[in-house]
Amino acid sequence: LAVHAYKTAGIKLPRTTRDQLNQGESIRKSQLLPGDLVFFKNPKSNKTLHVGIYTGNNSFIHAPGKGRRVTRASLENPYFFSNYIGSRKFL
Image (tube, rainbow, N blue to C red; front, side, top):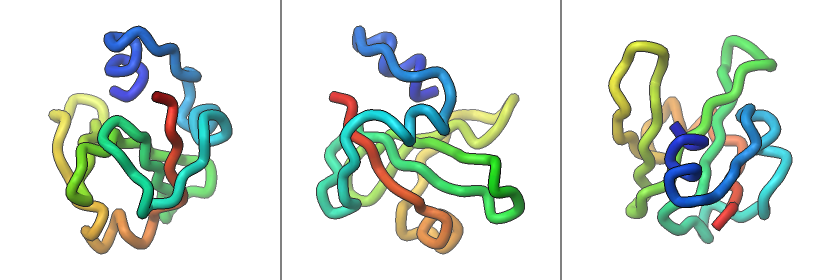
């Protein structure tokens, strides 16, 4: 989702979530602006990461999994709150 959205805006993102997390400008959660990327760990696997696109008001959109619809979620949701690992700015 993030790669496609950024590509549509003319911005090339690294292909993998891990590479996205390691590039761009690191920002604090309090500095988030719409379009910034938010990253989460999978509590069941140290290797799995998830990314969403911040939309403002503590919300973000993300593709929850193959075959599932893009959805909006809250950074205050207990699952996302406890698994949040950082944010990056690419814009």
